[in-house]
Amino acid sequence: MKKRKNRPILLISNSSWYLFHYRNLLIKTLKKTNYVVTLSPYDNFTQFLEENSINFLWYISQNAIEINPFEFSRSLIRMIFFIKVIKPKLLHSHTLKANLATAITAYIFNIPNVLSFTGFGRLSTSPFSGIFLKFILKIILFLSTHKLSRNSLITYSKGRGSFIFQNKHDLDFYYKHIDKKKSYKCNLIYGSGIPEIYLKRDTPSTYGWDTDHEKCSNNIETVNIIFCGRLLISKGIRLFLELAKSNNDYNNYIFGSINSKSKDYIKSKEIEEANNIFNNIQFLGNMENPLLTINFNKPILVVPSLYGEGLSRSIIEAMSLEIPVICSENATSRIFDEKMLYIAKGNTIKDYSNCIESIYKDYTNKNLQKKLLYSKEKSFKLFKEEEIVKQTINIYKNLLDN
Figure (tube, rainbow, N blue to C red):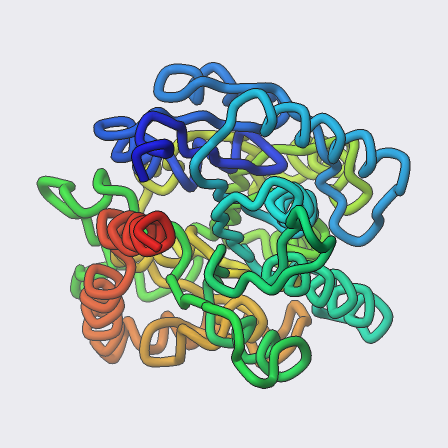
């Protein structure tokens, strides 16, 4: 422990955006008692990471489905070089490819490590990619339970690390297909939590959903539909656009950014055309805490994701603000149920239109506000960012105390 005392904790991800957006409080909390180093690619959020950590620029592809051996080897060699120079006392990695590179590096240097699986993404949604996912996870488990030693290339080392899963669905998948004997330490921590700014809002608005419907226009036309997240086809942005185009009576707002390097991102041309041609569609770009910026009544968050979600933070943020949520079955991550939100029965425009009608029916029957209050209480109880940070740091302490 004495040798480790002044060595840094290193956080790793495939984007600076991810570390800033989901691990900002963790980094700030660690900074009070530790040296903190971050390892991530350069993007618009790198400068913010540099305010609270020593940031080293490191590139790894964000495409989870394909692994280019040459590209991955180059990223791995750079990581090994950084780890040898930085000499961290603990590694905490996020996302599948970064986790694989971290597992290999931690195996080589015998460093305590935490690997966060932030949802298995598109890999969990088809048989072929599922085989690839299982193969990678088995490699990661082997590397995490062994270490290099002077006398042997392979030595069992069970207590060197820990895995974090964001939902029980992914954890059950892991135990069923990868580690049936449950031989390795795994933790269930619900995402990254709701930022404090949502919990400490002085005068929470109900956005008109608490207003007596009889005093308003008895017409569903007044609702405002929101998409909030990365503009990935697998996260349902194209389905959202089709829903918006199908009914001119709804206003539709899109928050998010486009990455031209990823095949799964919708083309900027599609967004621009929809924004210019349809008066009821507004593309508002990437904003920090977008749900806190809206100034219109009767918003509804729609999350039509087919992606293997870890835990959708936009859902819990909306719940904390008493904004009704409609999502796909996949986006529930087996955490949310119909007591908390509205679940589309399928992946068609009709399925989501039916959910909008259900919201308005509950509104007119005065049942909606009860549901929104219940969801808000659940979000505060289960998803506080401060509690998520405490749970994560406790995992660090247990590893470093061994």
